[in-house]
Amino acid sequence: MRILLAEDDPLIGEGLCLGLRHFDYRVDWVRDGLMAEQALGSSEFDALLLDLGLPDMDGMDLLGRLRRRGNDIPVLVLTARDRIEDRVSGLDQGADDYLVKPFDLMEVAARLRAITRRTTGHAQPVIEHGAIRLDPAARAVTCNGRPVALSGQEYLLLETLLHRRGRVVSRTQLLDLLYGWDEGVESNVLEVCIHHLRKKLGRALIHTVRGVGYIVPPLGDDA
Image 1 (cartoon, rainbow, N blue to C red):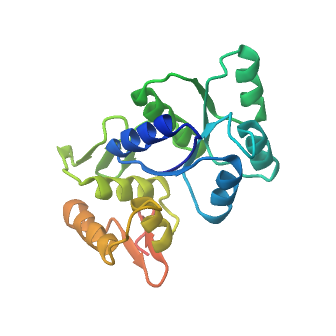
Image 2 (cartoon, rainbow, N blue to C red):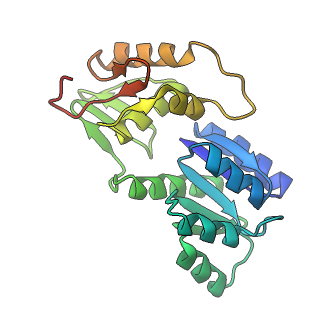
Image 3 (cartoon, helix red, strand yellow):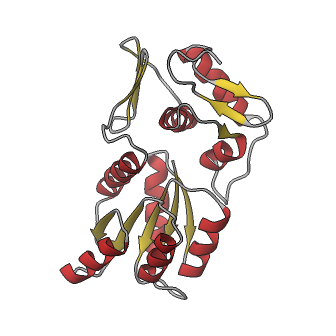
């Protein structure tokens, strides 16, 4: 899952980047509202972690602009503003959830999972696809009831493709998922991960759409 973090406090920003990467999230960090708006216009993210007290453009203003443009990215607001009026205002502007600083990293990760499940139509935490069962809360995968050991990158790819089953996910989107802005991209890492997933879960699970990307077809679809 690729997250955009909009936070101007360097200690909080660094802590969230390091902590969320332990949960295998890819985190791109910007420090003001204008940079966040530009990033959202040029790259695809699964969720936005948004501080309200941003320079150049207030987080509440950014949230309102996103929603007026029809951008429905899941938004988790992180803020020191603890008045009930601020929370209500943020939710009314279109935030999906709200956490007041200081917060616990595990709760941030859990709420990110919850808002992305809701907005992708997967309200239940467990994803089942034939013999494959993926539990995001436990970060566990089983096939025919047996545990399957996956690397962090393999898990991210599988979770993304299962969430979007029936839709082609482009190679660029998947590489963006695996690598943040500050990391170099290894030329064949995507193909290697797909190869490993097919080896562990069956070659028929993930189909290649030549020149575009990959897809997990709906069950019963052999195309």
